[in-house]
Image (spheres, one colour):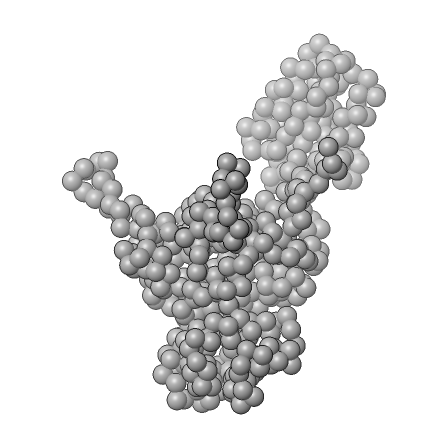
Amino acid sequence: MGELGTMGGTRDFLPDEMIRREYVIDTLKTIFRKYGFEPLETPAIERWETLAGKYGEEGEKLIYHVVSSGSLGTLKAGERTEHALRYDLTVPLARVMGMYGDQMVADPADLKKQSRRLPRPFKRYQIQPVWRGDRPGEGRYREFHQCDADVVGSTSPMVETELIALTVEAFRVLGFADFTVKINHRQLLKGLIEQAGIAPAKEATVLTSIDKLDKLPPEKVRLELADKGLSADQVDILFQVIALEGTSEQVLEGARSLLSASEAAQRGIGKLAKLLNYLEALGVDNAHYRIDLALARGLDYYTGTIFETVTAAKVGSVGAGGRYDRLIYDLSGGKADQPACGTSFGLDRILAAMDQLGLFASLRRAGEVLVLHFGDPGVSQACFELVRGLREAGVRAELGYHEEPFTPNGMRQQLGYANEKGFAYAVIVGPDEMAQGQAALRDLTTRRQEKIPLATAGQLIVGRLRP
């Protein structure tokens, strides 16, 4: 047997890390539900035809194919497989809408009355792993979780407004102070490409290059665009717009002037202006969002507003999303036609950013109270009753796994476990405490210990933990 290990770009998550992950996931779930989103899960494996052609030329190269061991002998070189691992959560959502979006179900209380199986608009959140054949790096993995919230069935810019508001709230609750949601519109970019005289067939590849401006210096992006066949004048026209700076309103005014000949660009600018008005009306802090015309989001399925969240940490974007009004129609072969818009939080990137910024300093392990256990007559029963009462009150309480009668060494072993796991309190009930009708309560942070009445120990501890 070879050396034990995991595949590159994948990881085991031990309890310390899982506590952090669950903290972020629970925070996001709470906010998703607060905004009216409902949960959804889809299979890890999708049909290849479901995923193909949805992520652009570079994205499609990163899709993992799935082959059963029984099919290996019949698979020919270069042949596509029937199945692939999920690349993101957006395309599976589109498949779900194509399959169930128009289904009607009877009301159990009134069988003559029917309603949609999925309400419209359908607001769903989904937190599951996705896979990409990417090169592992800082904050970049082959297997990682996405945390998505999407609205299907509305073209209103109020959808984008709420998704951005949700994003700002989520990052503030997680403790981030310095973060920005960058916003742009694909129609504006489409108009810019038209005005630069670039062929529509090159739109996707041009946007892919522009989208690298947050990773590469402008000179390298210019060279890449030139290598793709753009003239120096065309590249200059692109950069004249995407390099606009100032407040969001100033950037839009500059774009409105420079792209006055493009109807598509003017439509995009108008929608972004309305979005800014809605964000202001909803009271979203404008210190945390801005128009950025260099944002391109290379995925082919975006049709309208696009956005991406960055923080002070050096991990790249920690969330992104946008409007994709044609994806469900295209995926269902025209059977379902629903506009959609969503946002995706990169769990692993968020965790890496929080770690860099020291936002986990106050996060403790799950345990609150350890009730030490000893096998002396009467002591065991008292310990069981105490831990049961604490749990019924909602306290995260554990019972020490020690069967022998009280000894100093048995107490030290259990207290060692309590300290390793980061409990707030330990409760010691030995033969002496039982005889006195007392318990010893040790604060494991301050190391102070006091005697408390055994009969009311549970009440007292709950009062300290839930003041």
